[in-house]
Length: 397
Image (tube, rainbow, N blue to C red):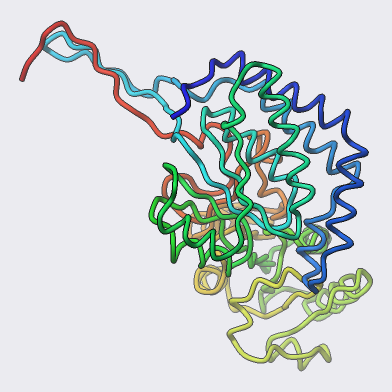
């Protein structure tokens, strides 16, 4: 087990990492091109997440720099108590120990997620996908360089170059201690990890996010939010389903305008039975489609009877990630937000804000759709457990 590095060393490593990312910017982008050229799959969202350009390197640098500026999440006092017998009791945050991150396609995770785990005093085991291997190895090389520069062991950041069989064997019988596993990727990856893992897993689940346009919606806001929800189809916070209140005035005109706007940005629009019939759209093949996360240039529009019906439908079909209501009625919004069972709920704002950086955390390890121990974006202050410190002078019970 690695002895916890002091906060000055952790911050210095992160700042050095930011400098190295800038110095090696061109090399990272060129190496990433080799991963892009070697990718033979047809998953457009995976290809989108695989790509590293200048903007993506800027995000990596910003993540490392911001992490270095944040307060130490380890050793924060959460509770204190003076026992009748004179013992002083404290509960403080503590590192998990070793965190394994299993992810697909995204080389930026090798910076951001590893940085969050490292800053919170954890050793990181990185298991990236084969499609991003060269990019990941280059970034891990920079991690090791930054660690060595501050006399810290390179063991703090370790890359597991495992195939699927080796990964399964490691999950079932780890060859070193693992305290927490965080899978980031599609439903198949998550199911695979859940099936084989022998230690706690935080599920970074599917999106399949809904927008409900209530009968009291501002229609310009509704269109802007729905279009923004499809502006990055590979994101887990993208919108896949739109429910429109049947009592919305100018409903048919609104739906026509929405379809036109979506088609302009090459989004395929499907409808439920009623919307498909009234607007000459392809009808969804079955209700099972309501469960699907698309990660694609398509969206479903359906009609719904009321706010209560929208809440019920979202709770049945959505991924528990993000949901939005568009309404001018605050009481209606309150009912929706309190009763929709999602990690993030929005009133007149885009689901694309479900992101650690956008919600004030400075970055995220993952976006959890679990309820234990943290829901939604998992930031620096969430990647800790806690322990009890009890100071006495001979007390016995």
